[in-house]
Amino acid sequence: MAIANPDKVKPVSPRTFELSVTSGFDRYSVEHGGWTLSSVFQPVFSLSHMRAVGYEGLLRAHDALDRVVSPLDVFGQAARVGEAMQVDRLSQALHLENFKVLGAENEWLFLNVHPGALTEPYHMAALLANLKRLQIEPRRVVLEVLEQRADDIETLADAVQHFREHGFLIALDDFGAGHSNIERIWQLDPDIVKLDRVMLSHAAHSAHSVHGTSHLKHRRNMEAILSGVVSLLHEAGKLVLIEGVETEHEAQLALSSGADFVQGFFFGRPNPGLADASQAHTLMSELTERFRLQTEAKERRVATRLQPYVRAFERAAERLAAGEALEEVCWNFLSLDNAARCFLLDANGRQAGRNVVLRADRAAHEARLLPLIDAQGANWLRRPYFRAALGDPDRVHVTKPYLSINEALPCVTLSVETRMGGQRCVLCGDIDWIAEEEE
Image 1 (cartoon, rainbow, N blue to C red):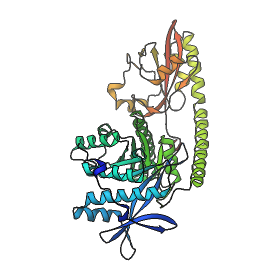
Image 2 (cartoon, rainbow, N blue to C red):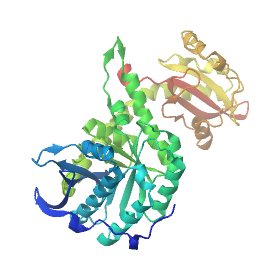
Image 3 (cartoon, rainbow, N blue to C red):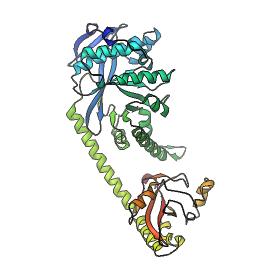
């Protein structure tokens, strides 16, 4: 993409804007289309640093009678008269002017940019010229690419790369809604991915009874999906921001998901000035402390819940090492509520024999996945429970809840290295892992 020389591009002049004092803050405004446009900034917080690390510039508009005009109306009107790109550049220039007087020292400025503006050579030149005039380094600007359909994704990806080469950071906005797909992550290679509020809302949805069925299982699944998406994005080398956090429950979900950044009314509303650092630190400290207490309480409940299974499993491993048959040593373990099956793996992860199952009522569940019932000879080398047992012998290991391939239901697996006939092996036992509230 050919980029115009920023030194030869006339930036938006500060004389275009009017500096005034509003709500005790110095800020610029500009007249356009009969409306007065101004900026507010919503803080972006790091959950680990417990402070604002950036501010998203948001447009505010008022008519001649000082009535509030929706930004959607402003951009909608601009699109109808063919001024979409002009208003896009104007709002960004306005945010830059106000960010300069905001007094932020190290924080990022998040700027929403329409994909069409990014592929226009003049846009980068004008943006660089304004930054140079205001003495703001490009590295302090995060360009938010809206998550929507782009007619030419390759051209957009090339444009994004050019901006990155000039020092800008790139964020993919509204991921999880609309035209979202994981391919966009690979195409645009953003530094930050902003998860749309819809994902958080689904995860936070409380259990209600509809047609006699509980939504608790669905909510639990959505919580797991939220954490899984965050983990996947981290594996891809992306920082994750969850936006639209409005309640403490949603804030706790964002914290437990492993997200890096949060944004929303719970933490801070859009404002002409900087966030209150002391208030934000206190809020997040208290949030983190409640999260710690809840996590520790949950871990204690899980340990208590698992204790009888672990004791029975330890005894089964001892009896197996003493020469008793697998079918005999597992009865005490399998007689416990929610114990599902036992199975034995050799030192290479290959299953020796079939699953040992006590209760006949499991047959109806397993029949749904008939091709998977016979696991004799299956190789579970990739499973964490196998690797953990061989890597740290002489104690029982417990996995986190995961989806069992046997029944497509949540389970945890106990595993321990033992010996049978002088050969190393790993004894495994599955437990149906039903959410506490469902028991």
